[in-house]
Image (cartoon, rainbow, N blue to C red):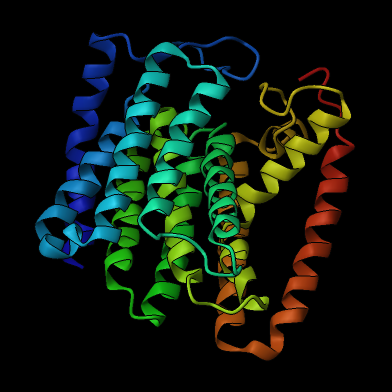
Amino acid sequence: MIVIIFVFLLTTLLTPAAIKLSNKFNIVDHPNHLLKTHQKPIPNLGGLVMFISMIIPLMVLQGQALYASENFVFLVGAVIIIIGGLIDDRYALRPVTKLVFQAAAGISLFSYGFHTNFFEWSIMDGMLTLIWLLGVINAINLIDIMDGLAAGVAAISSVFLCILLLAKGEFFFSSILLGVAAACLGFLLFNFNPARIYLGDAGSQLLGYLLACSALKWSINENFDHRLFIPILILGIPLFETIFVSILRLKAKRSPFKGSKDHFALRLVKLGYSVKFTVILTYLFALVLGLLACLMLFYNTMALYIIGASFVGALLIALRLSQIDMSAY
């Protein structure tokens, strides 16, 4: 509880300062009338706020646990991600350069043994770990397309991942996830529609990194069975978005890394829903997926039914959304 209150208050105190700093040094998100439809430049230093708000309490409250090799390299990876993200927010890096920073964070984790243990060859686990890390980082980045969307979904996902890790006695990562939830809630006071500040690539990538690592921590020493779908279900919204958008872009013979209007949230707005309603509806879906994941955790007999229903539901939603004409959006 102390962590939650402290991080929440720190975020609410730092965010106004970050808004002023962003405007002073021109670290802002400019509208381009394609995907960035806001009317004026919006401060883009939300990632720095999130990092400071979570790391300072972590250093104070976790103390020696932070300097255990596995936990320390996790922190090193977070620093790599935030540095790459801040550079991207200021200078708009190419997708390949972004991936270099993300891969560097993943390789540092793998080099210290922070990876899955599903295969006899560690290189296979390393590749799977890297794919998962890059996938979740970019999935959270991808849903950061609407005021409050990424921060709210990350807050909900972090709460349910925290439940998973508490069930395994992983208190270090549980405290991190509580910090993520508190920081996101504090940030949403300024980021919910109409937003006064954005997460930026630094913020969305940092959140993706923290969620991906937490899910990895839970999966370590787990059997290769239905339980691995639990964190996937919790992160279902950003993962659905990634697969959905990638398929539509490839189908249209466009690069999956090039921005487009294919996002599910934009398609819901095209149907006539407001931005606020679309974001809140997405929160509800994230909440439902988290509750289903908890059912899988505590009631193994329901696992196959939940996995099957989730897959069919996602497929039907994707088919309906793909039929929406976005040419006039």
